[in-house]
Image (cartoon, rainbow, N blue to C red):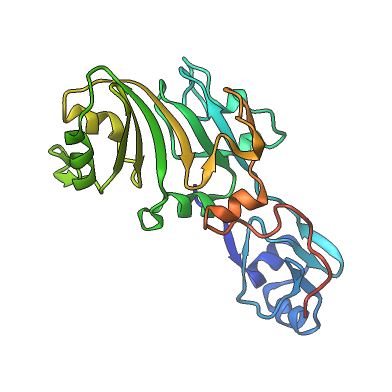
Length: 254
């Protein structure tokens, strides 16, 4: 999802009676405040979540939303679907129609899904360079062996794309269950990796994204339920969220 960003002078001209050329004087007269700080240049970037105040009047107080959901089986990771319930159908939030999904899960895959209206944040979360780990619990039709562990650590070759997956950590929990941690999200990747051994995935459940887990806030998030991410959880993801999610700007910083 593309984020909306503007130069300060263009934003002021679009949202007030002042023109682009007026903005330089407004900045010099210290009449514009951005996220609690005096504006310093007409070239400053203003995003859809920048708290903008001109002459004491708020021009923009739109706050970002960051949610987690425990997705049940049979629910589509989409905002609209004619055949199935979607993740948005499960969410009760006044701004849920602004949300998009960060890292989709298949129809029959369950577990942790992140949603936001902050396009810049979700792109950073999804960038390969971020190397954000995702952990899954997997149930399989055939027994596992240490051969799987070594192969996942080396990477599995996908002939159709002509690529090899990045190294992944596989921990065998029982004869037919394992915990898999990877940093990619290719199409049906987990099922295809086990498909290399002709071992069918019977159930797949995402338990964490980075350090964010369904067990946060001291208790397991119930299936089908959602809640906002806390400031601490966002911080632990290692990717900065929009500045004023949790509180309005304090006194002006000069």
